[in-house]
Each structure stands twice: as C-alpha cells, then as structure tokens.
Length: 130
Image (tube, rainbow, N blue to C red):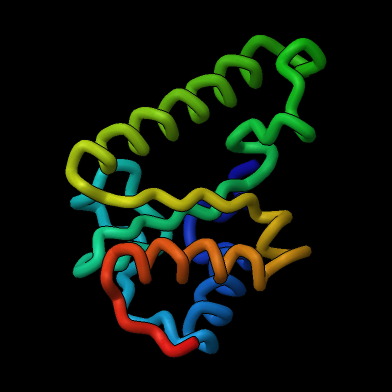
C-alpha cells in the first residue's frame, strides 16, 4: 500500500488534461492552505475539485464495511469518508463550490466529469467558450 500515490495519480492527470483541452485553465493543484487540500482548485472562482479513489474514499458500489477484511480497514475508510465530509463543509463555509468525482468516472466518462467542473465554473462566473 505504500506504493499508492496520494497526488498526481493517473485519474487526476487525466482530468487535468481534459480540463485544459476544454479551456478550463487557471487552476492550482494540491493547495495546502485549503481544507482537504483539493486536487484541483480554481482559486479565483472558488471551485474545488477532488478525484476520489473508489477504495480509499468508500464508493458505495465498491466498499461494503461489513465485508471489510479487518477492523483496521473499516475504521480507515470510515475516517476518510468523514474527513471528506468535513472538508466539503469547511470549503462550503468559505464560499467554495465542491466537486467530487470518482476515479472510475474519470476513466470511464471523462467528458461528464469535465462538464461538472465547467458547469460549476460558469455558475461561479468564469467565462468559458461553449
């Protein structure tokens, strides 16, 4: 498990490339000064994007706590889910829009993920081409 990357994962890189190709530039990555350290942060428009791994963040179709192999993993994933919710709440209280996408969605349906982000950016006032 030590080999699992915490940032600049393949899904993150793929989403960033797709966002650049769609004209959604001007973001920063892994800002330590923001709650939850978003994978992608559009500072000016206050849009935070997280690319969550289905295992590590407890995707309902991929994670069943009753079937977990040990208490350690049940607690670990539960803490991750709770930390995600806390980060979402803290960012919302600061006026941020939070977008969370699953790594499998970035892989299987990148266009939908990009459209989610673009929709949030437009709502925040960022001018983007059609």
